[in-house]
Length: 391
Image (cartoon, rainbow, N blue to C red):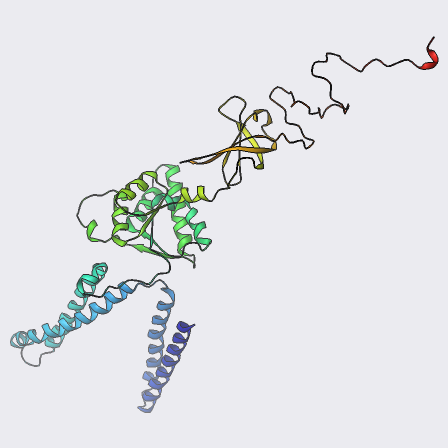
């Protein structure tokens, strides 16, 4: 709201200045100037306002680098030009316009050098200006550095849509270059993965709930001139920025932890959010394939959790009720072991081969009473003849 009021006040002042400049030129009877001057004022001010509205993600380090570089460049240009005036006067003569041109050129060169230097070393401002460190105020904890694997995976975009992450997301330039190299690969599978990663980055960049920043990765630890692998550069950058690494790579997870860098593994988060099953609990699951052991069937819950069903191979393609017997947590995820529900609910659970549990009725038989498993009679039992025919 305060920013909107500032922009409205700026627009009103610009319009007033344009009208005032037109009025002054009309009084001086400069009609062409009275038309051109207000338009020029409105055009320049409009470009500044549109640039401010378009560039929403501003960095205090970059802005401070430009401001300090400009001030230092003007100061150095002024001092050097004073020392250069006698040399220019003796060369071109007193009152030569080349003296003014030389002073302006020297000031422009000084401004360019200082601004360029500050922009390239903006992360080390705290060493240049003692007791002052320019850092962006971010919500939440430390920033998160995204790895190539987690960008290609795409689940980070879904997590950001839930507003669970309120910290700054950092994508280093070398990670973006690696994604681009994968997208340009001759292998179709790699090319599709790289394009998916670029689409995920575009989705994150267009998400108003996410503060996404592209980082140059220009830290002193990486300016050694050596060719360092992407994973090592990622860990070094996260350590220099006091950030955390978000990845799905198991090896990168271990390397980062060994170097004292905190890691967020999306696979571990996904496993932690899966359905909690307690031994003795009943659940519905569809048996989709056979298991590794004899008689086992395998099904999956909605979140992808594998369910191993004892004596479930004969039930492939059916949705059955099972009772959980045990739960196994592994590095690959959570596995649930169970067996078909044997509660007396009017249903039956066949064993492989077509037999039924003892005491259960055959649904294909019209006889409500179950026969004795040891009875070998076939067909109906003999009936007693009518009493009138007895002799």
